[in-house]
Image 1 (cartoon, rainbow, N blue to C red):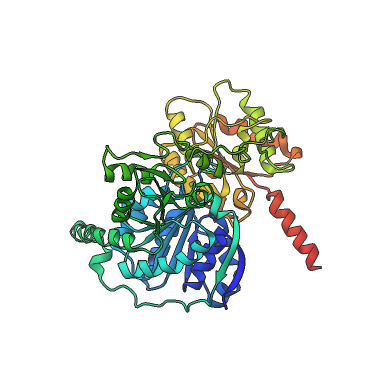
Image 2: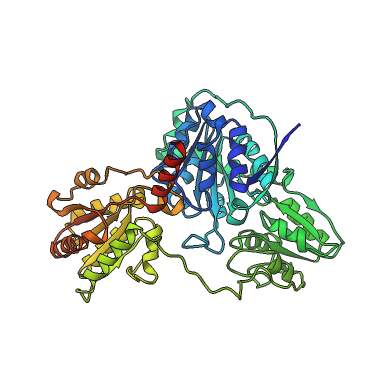
Length: 532
């Protein structure tokens, strides 16, 4: 008898991968994908089987290492949030050209409404760009089931498979039926060098072969058991419900509506034409950007009425919910999913006792002495320094941008140009920018605020812990302009003095305020107390 377990969507994905014979998970922590790798790290089955599960330095290294495991004939999973797809895009797109050996599944967790992200990009575009299959689960059970299917599909087609989920599915729980795990899949290592060496002559042949596979991918989507068409009243409304949107349609749709549940891409063109022939108009319900809607409009032509996010029947931005989907059917709900009106807003803030607080206190004090000072921030919990009471940073764009933006601003005459970046973000994407600055002898001051962990996503290991001085020296930062300080109120005089001196230096200087995150320290102390 299958076991029933209450699982987050992320946990269902992780368990599904383990039960599908996974040999390695490669990931950089990023909400809402983090719990997938954490579940595997804590799994007794993963430990028993020796599943590789340590965190990677960034998403590009994760993708490339997973591709190497696939090359060796093992099944690998790559996990990231949607903006991580931008980082791994070079390897991901080319993996469609090389193809795979062992099954390779890339999990992208999108974040509509930007709960913890700087944009709402839709990862399905990457799958279409790379010409690889895309899977989009609607429920936790389907997320579990799709993992085995995805690995089988990957090995059968010899292509990576992109699985796309969203925050609402990743971070909600449901009962999932779980069977017995498969043994780990072991294939012979790849031996066809011309497939894997993307010199132009080889790449042209490989790309032509990838294009030739596209009709088969469409056929499989048309025949997929996951793309289910439920016919309603002839001549009535038809709905294409993708991913989590299917749940809201199932809850809100009036009787007689025809529904095509969409889980496997490329678009199942035959199924969509079948739906269109049965209905007088189509509503596309999808979380994210109008990825399906735009393609359906092109498939059916300008004369066939297709609605959704583009024509305002559904909101153009943010998450779907039962209320806005019901409104698209002409049903008015009470609106329980709107913002609470009786609660005072509580903006996020840095933890009490956090070392970042003392860094910003010192930084604001010194920056106030320079009317032209600009402070370039980065991605991490220290980004909260943009909010009251500090209001300390002037930019936050993407991982690693603080150093390179400070460099560009200094090139344009801004003085002082100060960059603040976290320890994990520095190793993820900041080191190359620092090398550019060193090579150009840019007059910038870089603050690597080191709390000894990847704090924003829950305290995962940081790749450069206890290595930052060595890294900076190796990149060419001069020893006399590299400082490690302890961010505490009692050290404020020393920290502000060093800041003033290094701002005046006409070259690259690095200051590393180093103190452990209060949250991880608290967990360690509690664990130590419980062990006694």
